[in-house]
Length: 175
Ligand SMILES: CC(C)(COP(=O)(O)OP(=O)(O)OC[C@H]1O[C@@H](n2cnc3c(N)ncnc32)[C@H](O)[C@@H]1OP(=O)(O)O)[C@@H](O)C(=O)NCCC(=O)NCCS
Image (cartoon, rainbow, N blue to C red; front, side, top):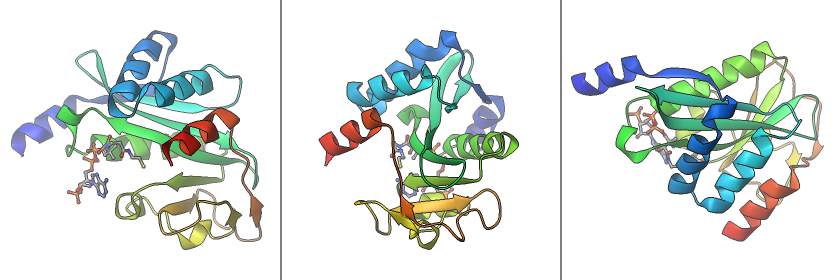
């Protein structure tokens, strides 16, 4: 555990730069698959205001998180994918990636975030399934969560969420 803490203390978190693209692609391909890696690459290089952060240790990209604008409520993002290489898991690196990403999103004026994932994991950041009930999507359920970055951002909204097509194509292929 002490070793984990000293490793975690050396990890840095920053926005993805052009020189990270190949590393992010390799990481996402190894944790997910090449389709997800391709979607990430396309979204990161798209003109949309995508937020992409890496966790770096000794010059190596060991984690990555992506938040992509979706059409629905004002200034909302979808969080996915979120990945840490297996050798570096359970050291709070995934948690720090989410914390840094949410801070950046707030700083840039984003008002809410949706995620489809493990409820127990994302609850620690304040994501709740009931907060996402307002979204009319076919994957509604306990694994679909939302977080208001600005109080009340989702309070008076309900309707569909329009994700980038590439994103949906990968999700469909997996289900
Ligand atoms: C999910 C992921 C990014 C977490 O990264 P990580 O650096 O290992 O996570 P952290 O060290 O910050 O957090 C570890 C904690 O999360 C818990 N946790 C990890 N994976 C979990 C999961 N799938 N469901 C619920 N809890 C989980 C651990 O038990 C641990 O709990 P604790 O803090 O109470 O001890 C990583 O496991 C991963 O890349 N998984 C494969 C891809 C994936 O499933 N991504 C999420 C898509 S929704």
